[in-house]
Amino acid sequence: MKLWGGRFEKTTNVMVDDFNSSIRFDKRLYKQDITGSIAHVTMLGKQGIIPMDDADVIKSGLKELLIDIDNNKVAFDIEAEDIHMNIEKLLIEKIGIVGKKLHTGRSRNDQVTLDMRMYLKEEIIEIKAMVIDLMNTLLTIAKNNLDTIMPGYTHLQKAQPITFAHHIMAYFEMLKRDVGRLNDTYKRTNHLPLGAGALATTTYPLDRDYVAKLLDFGDICINSIDAVSDRDYCIELLNTLSMLMMHLSRFSEEVILWCSNEFQFIELDDSYSTGSSIMPQKKNPDIAELVRGKTGRVFGSHLGLLTTMKSLPLAYNKDMQEDKEATFDAIDTVKMCLPIFNDMLKTLKVNKQNMYNGAGGGFTNATDAADYLVKKNVPFRDAHEIIGKLVLYCVTNNKNLEELSLEEYKNVSPYFEDDIYNAISLETCVNKRNVIGGPSKEMMNKVISINENYLNSLS
Ligand code: ARG
Image 1 (cartoon, rainbow, N blue to C red):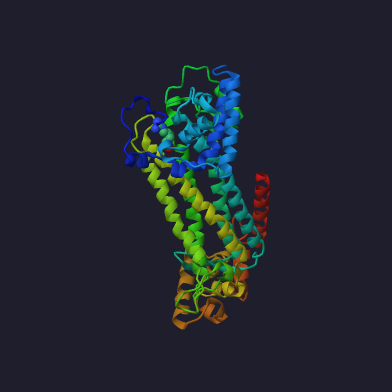
Image 2: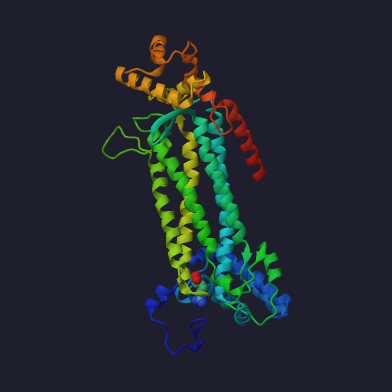
C-alpha cells in the first residue's frame, strides 16, 4: 500500500513504479532527510502541533534509523518511490503508528528542496576546500619559478617572454573567481524552504525561524510558491562548476601541449601518466585529457537542468526530480577531477632550460626593440615599422634580433647603440615589465604576497 494510496482503487503499474521512483539516486540524501525531519518534528512538538511525547518518540526513531542506514542495515523499496517516503515508511515500521504524525504540516515539495539545499551546502564547502588546495599548489609552483622564463602566446604564436610563475598565477586568478562564485551560490542556497508545504504553507502555527536555526540556515524563503518551485540554486551551482571545469580544461590543454615532444616544457610524473598498449615509447597525459573531457559532462548537466526548468509553470512539477542526477553527477565529477589534477601538478617536473630556449625564438623581444627606439624619442608607430622591417630582414637571413650586428641595426635606424643588446635580452624583457599585473620578479613577489594574504583570509 502506497503512503498516498487512499484515493486510488487500483495499484500502479510496475513500469510506473520504476519510472516514477527516484530512490535509486536520491537515497544519497538520507542524512539530510532525517536531519531535516528531526528539526521539523522538534518544532511540531515545541509548537504543540503534536504532543511533545510523540515528537520525542519520532525523534529517537529517526536517530536509530540513521544509524541503521549508516550501517547498511536497511533496504530501500522502489515502491516507496523516493527517499522521503522510504524513510517515513521505515520509521512507521520501526515505531508504529506514532510515526504517521511526522509528515504533519509538511509536503514532499518543501522537503525535497530542503534536502537538496542541505546537501549542496555541504558539497559547496568541500569543493571550495579542494579548490583552495589547488590554489596552494599553484602558489608553490609560482614561487619556485619566478625566474623561469618562457614564451607567452597569443593566437598560440609566440608573443612576449613571461615567466612560468606569471602564467601559473593566471590560473590562480580564475580559481579565485571560482571561489567567489561558490561563496555566492552558498549564500542563495542557504535559505530554508521548509514550511512552504505543497505550495501555500499550512494552517498549523509553524515556527519556521526556529527550524532555520536548528538546521543552520541563514534565512528563510519568504514566498512559499517560489520556495517549492525554485531550482536556481542547483543551476547556479552547475554554472559555477561549469566555469571551474572550463578553467581546468584550459589548464589541461596547456599541460597536454607542454608535455608534447614539440614543446617539452614539462614532464609529468610516471605515476600520473599512462602508456600505450601498442606503442612502447608512449607516455600519455591521460589525466589532463580526462579532466578536459569530463568538462563536457558538467556543461551537459548544466544545460540539461536549465532546459528542464525552462517554461515550467509554478509551482512544483515532477520534471524537477531531474535536478538530482544532473547536480549529483556534476558534483561527483568535479570532486574526482580536482584532487587528481592537483596531485598531477604537484608532481610535474619543469624543464626550465627548454622553456628558456622556447622564449628565445620567434622574435618575442620585437616589442622591446621597438620600445627601445621609443625611449630614444622615435614615435611608437615609426618604431613598430622599423622593427617590422628588421624582423623581415632577420627572417630572410635566418637570424634572431640579438644576432644582428650593430651595423645591421644602424642600417635601419641611427638611434641604435650598443645598449640595444641588453635592452632586448629575455631577462630585460621580463623584468622591465614592472607594472602591477606583469611578469617582473618584483611584481610577481608583490602579487604572490597579496594572494597569500587572500588565502589566509579564507581560513
Ligand atoms: N522525488 C520527488 C523529487 O525529487 C520528491 C517530491 C515529490 N513531490 C510530489 N508531489 N510528487 O522531486
